[in-house]
Length: 528
Image 1 (cartoon, rainbow, N blue to C red):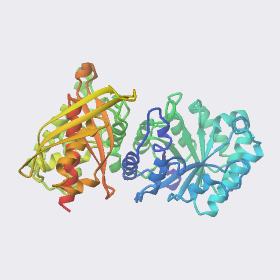
Image 2: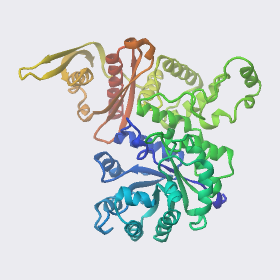
Image 3: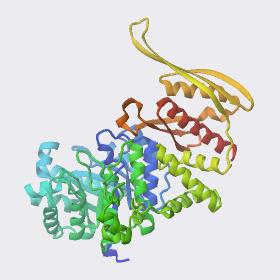
Image 4: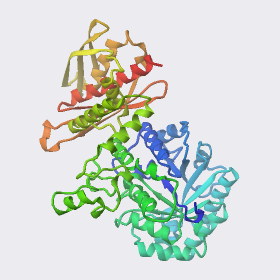
């Protein structure tokens, strides 16, 4: 590999991506995304800001064991008027289990004076003290030069001085941030040419926002001008209009340039799945026309285009869709589906013959047509396969359930809503009827099921449902729409798993997801 042509990819989905309106990752969400990013092979995974909130504190306490990526913590330079050694924010970063730390600091004279209200010299001291302190603590450091491009246009000399201070204080990467997202590709190249006179290009990075729909274009312009470190997010998440979309940038770099990345062409095939996984976690529908990974990215409508593609796919396609894990909608290939299925079955150590493989593939297609999605609900996927090949028993059978909700004013004049669920089960040849109450119908059903099962299966004591997500699949049908429910679960062994249920009735869909969660837990407990 030509080291000069190596591009280092920095993913900030778990931190900058969470700035997206309506996005709030749980620890389980972060673990799922981080594992997928490590499998893909990005160089750096920015996990969040330790010390800033309980979720990030919990996430940074986990032993993630990345095999390809560097776990990175985000924070800011020391506060004005405080030494680096006595700054609690910096020490929270240093005491985390991240070996790489990305510090944001102002690189704009205007921002220093108006936003921070301090002198230019104090800001330079904050940069110098902070990065020298990280160097003393043997941490690889990255300088996110906030508002750099706007600052350069207003006061070029000061912005370049900020970069030089960080470089001379042992920052590994000097990342030029288009914080407001208003810089165009030609400006990016022109300014970076000026920066290279002061900072070696092999130490430069780019962090572009997408406010002019140029996030990916600006990143590519920076790379072509000499930058060797690129920051971005999966699906372009981020505040306002988002960040550089790594799902579009990565295949462009790998497949269309002479630059090298840590992502192999084999791993590139997981890109569509990663994009879908994030959409499932966010409980949102990914745009069908998303480049490379969208449902319509390689879709060809009938007519001349479809006819031409049938004869020669390259006629109207810029790459083979299978290179990024996507598929063509004109010529349907079962082989891609089989390859993905075989790979997943190997991970689960499930051995089946070719006839069973075809049956499972058809079953999955049928289920997906009904609204199921197994991209993130791998526990339900495993149960589906094991049921099909007779490798799992049913630990209980539901005869019927009833749920009632009562909305009333209590004696203190406070509005309350009570939920009550009654379940009739058959467990090990015994009939059980229990009643559960909860803060909603789903919680009430969960409570009733546990009461019925706990004497037979005591390990259910440590089962916890940690997240609940609902997606409407056919909004045109209004209140009669098909509903998909995802439930995340964990237990005392720190395992995390996700199950899915689908029904036109949201309570029924929820029960199905709970049923799979309990079954998955029992299967693993009883087959250790």
